[in-house]
Picture 1 (cartoon, one colour):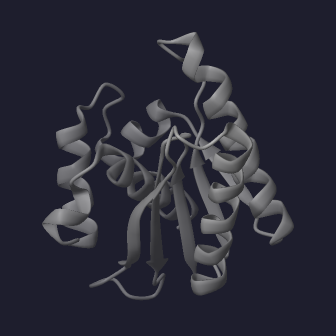
Picture 2: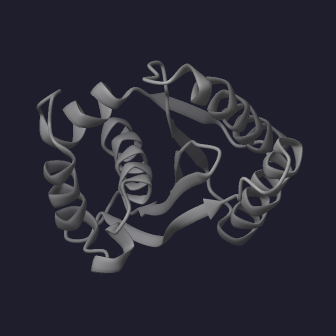
Length: 161
């Protein structure tokens, strides 16, 4: 099974494509690709949303994921970012629907509990678990957005295993 994990945003969308080999106890998870979809504030918002759709569509075409796991954003420190991120999330969900990919949402608390067993885990603890399960290259976990996307994908894989 191939899982596309997404950490939504407008300027930076983290993604992680994880293959779950259910029958393989030695190597149950493999990172196929991870990275960022980025947009620039120089573009008007509709063009930024279009870029997200186009880049995500190419990623889906390349890996043909069975499911998408997305971090559910329900709390914003800054109201100015809430609407743009919600719009980007809508585009991400629409892209999944157009490609007939089921979507599963997880809150940050669910991800932390699944990955570490502790709902208030720090990002470093989650990244440590990602490294243990996926053994990604160091530069792949350079950004929190990529690590969050991989953690969301792994959360789906672990919960559905």
